[in-house]
Length: 351
Ligand SMILES: C[S@@+](CC[C@H](N)C(=O)[O-])C[C@H]1O[C@@H](n2cnc3c(N)ncnc32)[C@H](O)[C@@H]1O
Image (tube, rainbow, N blue to C red; front, side, top):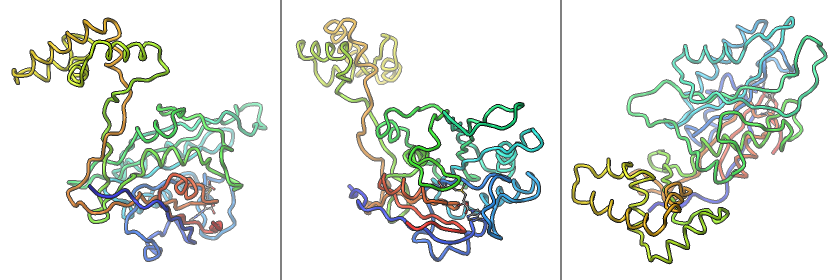
């Protein structure tokens, strides 16, 4: 079994142009990144006073064209299981929205990219708007984009279990209520650390093979221990012990499910040999547990192992890239979670 990745994550902030990442290739410690997480300048919002800056294009269409070409060019730096998370907000012009997040999404689709998630970052507070004809803007878009599929490539890496385990209070839906100031580092247009952390937990692999570059996939299974905060679950476990039920009973309960016509019967159909035995064990357990039987059918999930490649080589923690790194929020979030990260910015902040 390959070893767990090294404990000390590496992070580095470099100076460069996100629209011309190829020029930085030699400074990167890895050929490809496992995930790209970034928040580029929005159209006509802030002037970063640099000749190469993005965001000051004359029209929204020009901005979208440059940004879409830029993100498209990043596919070269993505591992086959990699994806891009990009945070964008719209801009008002002459009292109406110009639609940059929608236009950008369309432009990426036209370039063959797929949209795995369109998250809404909902902000509980915001700067009040001076216009009486406008509501305060309280949300931004975060897209998860997957590059055009190459034959034989695995699916994009996604680990919902990691998010649920490390941040049990985080929403598992696609609307994230995160305060703009939660863990920010003083940049004029910051990205909250909480947002970066959630994204990294979901999409940056914990283990990547150092030989073939494949991400190991987490295997989760139902936990044998029920949630001790639930009274019904505690009683269910007591009854389980009192009646000397066994692991085989547990497996039968879970195979059969709540109804007697559950998955178990379907799965066992044809095998013949086990079907009657599984059903008999489930019936026995049902007799002993009564209504508490169902507690075992929706048991919490737990990590049971990793689906690894065949290399049996050591693994490393995932590498993230933020091409518009600003105050290095993504890098610091990666470091805290044990991932490695590189940040690029025209004016990089010191780490
Ligand atoms: C919205 S801020 C990023 C904020 C960052 N996520 C944080 O939490 O601090 C956008 C950043 O992009 C940088 N930038 C603008 N144009 C760039 C370009 N062409 N290449 C690299 N960085 C650029 C700006 O200097 C700015 O720091």
